[in-house]
Image 1 (tube, rainbow, N blue to C red):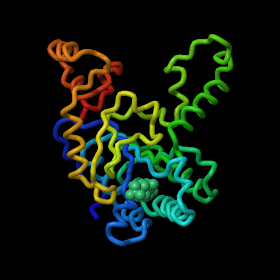
Image 2: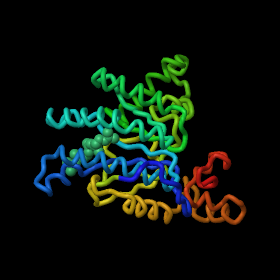
Image 3: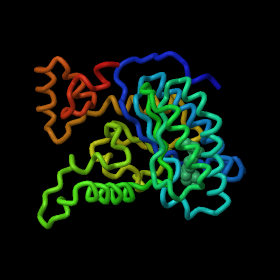
Length: 278
Ligand code: FPP
């Protein structure tokens, strides 16, 4: 396994934020007559590989759906293995992530986890908090509906006047309370394993994200597969509600217009768009 310190080799445009549903671990294992949990173990290697690939390509945010609110319904043994894997990943990988200047965040309803795991999460986040090269977010006991509910609760606690009948609530009032408020919306969503569903992932944040579905099972998803997803992303025209003509006119008039077609959010100040600085 190579180290996370490989030097950037960035060619062309990269999505600033990639969000992934890592699906197909169980099927990867079943095809090899192995227990399902063997797929999760190999899935950790694929997580490491995807972090390395994102560092190499200049992706700034990588968000991984590791355990959904609904995954508690799985057999107890499988849930237990997943919890042990989270713990061992936090213990084993944090040194490497820190060295590679990766900031680790874990989002979701963490109250349900064992206190030992919660403590490791707090320690790992604190240790890497100063880094900005890549923000790696692990979604654990996360669900998009949970996120919207908890953000609504926190918004109303912070601004009780918004609970008045008829009070207008703008998206900009609400968004700071979402669990992923520190990151821009994902540019590219990837789901491995052949299914074509969002499965209660980032329901609010995926509104304008480009969707990409891969047949590869997660343990087989590597840098080459990531490059295919990025190539598909680059071929898309992101219009954000505009017409194609408007986007193209913008291209002719603006020195930064290439970024517009590439997918940078036009409502954002140009200076902060990763497409332009990378
Ligand atoms: C979905 O595959 C995968 C999961 C529910 C767990 C993902 C966990 C890992 C990749 C390992 C731990 C990762 C971190 C970041 C600590 P599935 O089991 O639903 O596969 P199937 O659809 O083939 O049954």
